[in-house]
Image (cartoon, rainbow, N blue to C red; front, side):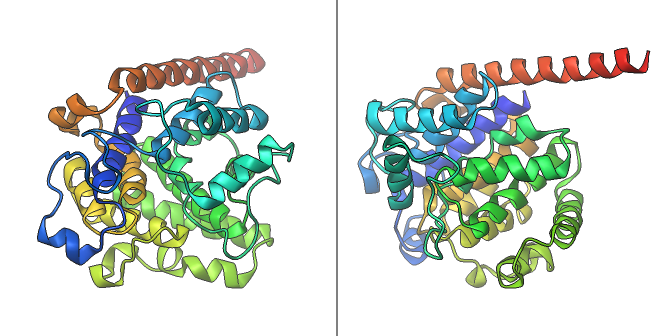
Length: 325
């Protein structure tokens, strides 16, 4: 049930943030988000999730057929051109970098090269949708995990900073999957990622330094006024980890995330994925699930992913046992 809880978690965090996206922290503080609400910024009905969840579900849909970067990109094009995996049959929000990258794919650019690779191509558009890949890369060597995460990020965001943010997030999520508590999972992620960075020797020190607060300090100890919640990938990673580590329930995690203001749907989505994974399905408020748009389709997708990866894991064990015999 971890995948169901994760998919519902990320989409609920997203839906909580949609009505207040772009609002400042100060403005939201005058009327804090305490439960699901509708309309607001995008004038969407209650329970509506955004492109964040749409692209995560497109990734998951592709993984049901196996890992194929071209097919993942094809799913993104389907969303962009044909409103595939949208809550109401119409794309109502899309980032500039993501739109440009998908246009590149449409015009024949390889998914490995379609995403932006300059300093200003470090929005949170790949981090927001990366969670489903965690279930595919589980139990694979770290070099392979990094390669896959880098490739999936690169479809829309190819800069090493965006890739590193996705890698940090997925390594942390993997530790949660394996049953570590939040703090132990965070410390283990720091050790794993720092060792990989040091041994790989392909990362420029100035890029690594952007993640100093996450990788070398404890992001949970920073005060709220130092946590930014813009659309910049480093801000989203920091804010999501900060919200998750400083709360003790799914509900508190995602509400803290959206009440930070600014890019509320993405901070909510990225936090919600971790919180759903960690706290489980029973921890998600039932009344929030009840109003979530296309909840049955989301649960069905999660179950298909769950079934696939259970079968793959079982096959891996059988192959190992036969080899040992």
